Image 1 (cartoon, rainbow, N blue to C red):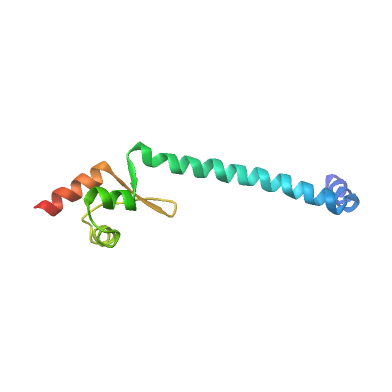
Image 2 (cartoon, one colour):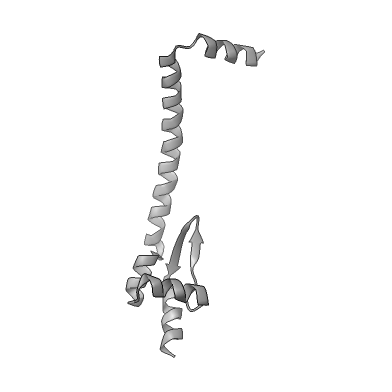
Length: 99
């Protein structure tokens, strides 16, 4: 019976009503995405470095950092589609390179 009520509400809704409903739903979804994105952005302050920051600390190019990551000189942390390095990763890589 609830399916029939929902169908009736949609049938009697105007285009403006539908646009407003969709807008509210999108606003909620985007707010959730923005909240989770800001949490990911805050995490590098907790000892995680983005690729560019790690390369600067190591004083190497991004290409060199990528190569070192591929061959195992430095460990990386993948969070979603992003790659981060910790202080320990950077210090261990410096020790390996300086030998």
